[in-house]
Amino acid sequence: MEKLWINRQSSAELLLFFNGWGMDEKPFRHLDGCPGLDVLMLYDYTELEKVEIPAVYESVHLTAWSLGVFAAAKVLQDVELSGSVAVNGTLRPVDEGEGIAPAVFQASIDSWSEAAAMKFNRRMCLEHHDFFKNSPPGRSVKSQKNELIALREQILNGPVPENIFQEAVISLNDRIFTRHAQETHWRKARIPVMIIDGPHYFFPALKSWKDMLFR
Image (cartoon, rainbow, N blue to C red):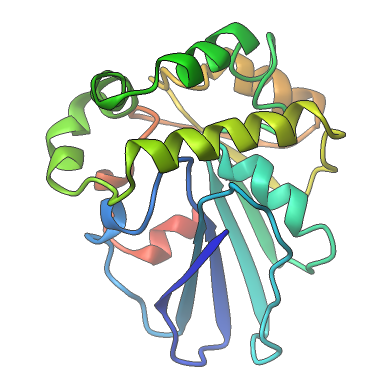
């Protein structure tokens, strides 16, 4: 698991951002920093590990996106969170009714290539595709596939993690995790849901890391 400090100024507040599968910081470089808010990004879940939070922070907030929702719940069970938001993901990410259908997930692994990545990115981004093309993650197809294989094993060969989220954000036009699957999942968990415009990757609509708090 990779850890990258986007902003570190010993602020009172810390935002943990669990990125999506196959990602790094590059598709988020447009987000401005905010005085008083440190940001630690986590990505590449080929190997999951616990996250040590420096004691300097008075409050720790979590925003997790896509498959980062599952990863965050696996490694942050013992972390006290002041706020936690799941964005376009569920705790059952490989699931017929509450995530991505197992056959679709496996097909993505089997067919993953440069061409498959281009097709996936168009579905993920929709109207933000041009933006994403200009700021793609610096991950190889091989590393993305290895991560996806590892995530599949972690998801299917272990228990569903306990919920750590207080709120869920769902994109109206998400074509990766459908709105129906997400609403079904979070309704069962009795978690309030916020519906927003946009596709799975909607972040060009945000201006700063503070917007990632969704408050």
